[in-house]
Length: 335
Figure (cartoon, rainbow, N blue to C red):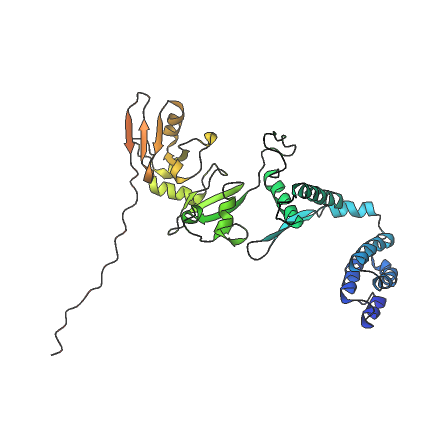
């Protein structure tokens, strides 16, 4: 405040609010030193008679008049700082912040606002603010907003970066994913979120990471990743131990993870749909009319080109021995 003596005096005399002084100081800090005295003289006077919103607008205009550098030059430099970031909040909420040219930000807000107002009707319980939030997040996550196209009307093709969908990673237990319990899920980059919220999005533009509750082993990541993550790959190798083709003994650590129902046909990346196949038998399975399907526990039922059926079972891990019981040492009676 040393460079703003008039504002400091107005604060000391209680002629302006502390919040107004903070606004003046923030704007003055972005001005060259030579311009701050003129800014101080006019800003303190404005703060005595304006509301906070009016003052913010007036200070912005005053800054532009007093700044030594042309606005176009400053804007070109400021554009280099455009960015998007997330600020985590409490209770499963977060804030998405966009720092970009004002024309783009106001245009984006206007579109979300107009679409929210289109969706508002007599039976809509959501507030306009809630509708804006839902519209904005759906547009970014899925490229469209539910309810903006009537049933039976074909949606137009996207005009921006086709094929790119939002993706976040939610880790939850198999029981929570199936609705058998409500163990909190973990949102990557945020932390715990309610299981109900995780279930509601886990089958859309979200990476499902389903784990076993006791071991934490990854058993599914749904359709968002074709290749299994490292922990799932390790689990698969431990289950299969070798290539799953009949008679093959090549180690699973050297094998490839094959989708039983092929990825291109809608198969998921999950332990129920993956088997370890060495390179040779992976090519054989896709090229010579060999087929197989997985049963519970990883049992593979193969069908040869001639129709012969062969079943292979995963060797699995050795059973863990129970801990030894307590040992009692016979002692002579006390009498």
